[in-house]
Length: 338
Image (cartoon, rainbow, N blue to C red; front, top):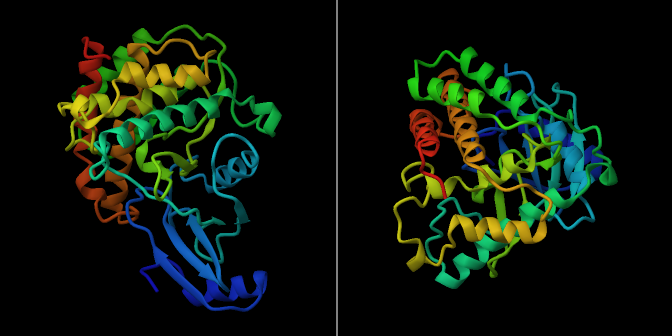
């Protein structure tokens, strides 16, 4: 068993009553910073359990109900996702709502330099990431039952207000670069162009399952921040490795990317546009916005670590990345783009 934050026999009894009696094994998965996640086997069925953290959380955060809904909606599309099995809303059982999904076999890479792969594999994997994101954005939300999954229009204005509000509500100390970045984004946000797509909200290498032997994406995970939003928010976020160093959440800035086989940001974006040609061109604003949003996410991780509710033992060490990502965002505003 594992260091679960709930009563394991209670879960076992629930599974027996739901699926029929059988042996159970549970293993907590490391690496997640938000919703506690477990490998779960019951009566021979291999699943993943993902739950909201126990205790108080920010309004709208850790939305496991939205994760489950979008997994259901994307079944049968060109976007690879695990099959959802069950959602349990009542927190009385495990201390918070949770859901079960199938366990997809694959690899997870947390270092964007992809150590251990050949240069050709690195290139193919990056291009598969771009294609997967584009296929998501090419879907029409109403055709998969997600026409009401978010509010249309003024996406960046609303997102800047939302994440700025989370930063202002944080008990963390001052980060001048983050305040400067918010001011720049507010002054330079582009006019609303009406583009809307299913936005993942956290589309990056660490949230993708890669085929066990081939350099291609077999499942997109961690949908808690998903909504209807501007596709360039996701694309800008997916471009962060080109703007962050290896010690800044495992980016690739400063590495010999040509020798590694990693495509340039321009090549990555070009691959994306082959499959989502209606998405407008990526601009400096979108990458700076992505760095700002991730900086606030790091603030939240540090706050949860101090409160004792973070999902990873590494959470306390990630807090300083908020200031570093804010500074990288300011670098982008001054010309460090592409």
